[in-house]
Image: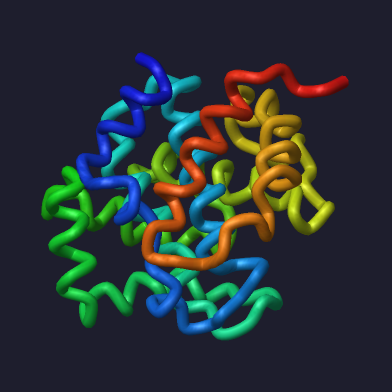
Length: 201
């Protein structure tokens, strides 16, 4: 399955794939719309590389939610749980998720992943380990923007092979697209271009 095929598993237009700027409580350059968009790109690539196709709609929903309830850019163990709690007051987002292939029975897994992404490490025996590990690795790859990504902490070997791409994605897109309701639609062609051209040595 190609990356475009994986992206198509979230069955909404590109412009709806990431939260609009006004949905974020904290207007952040570190954890705002651009970060979430890059995490989604990494999520698509991880699903393509690992073959965990059935996780895609709920992984997209988890990525979408994971940082919308941050109140600052510092350490915050509870912002994942706060993001999950916000969903109860966002019926339009829940309707968007339904259009994107998320089913009611997916929500316990999404809750676990979003809550855990900021509050510790999942156990491999946890029923929602796979989704949580994919979210944490996709989020972790964008730590290149902070300069503190430790590839050894990534959970999937496929993720460890994506560090150079993550660096290039950040370097070639950060600050070049202003926050907007169509952010991902403007980012995606740049992603395709990066993937189609060799990474300079």
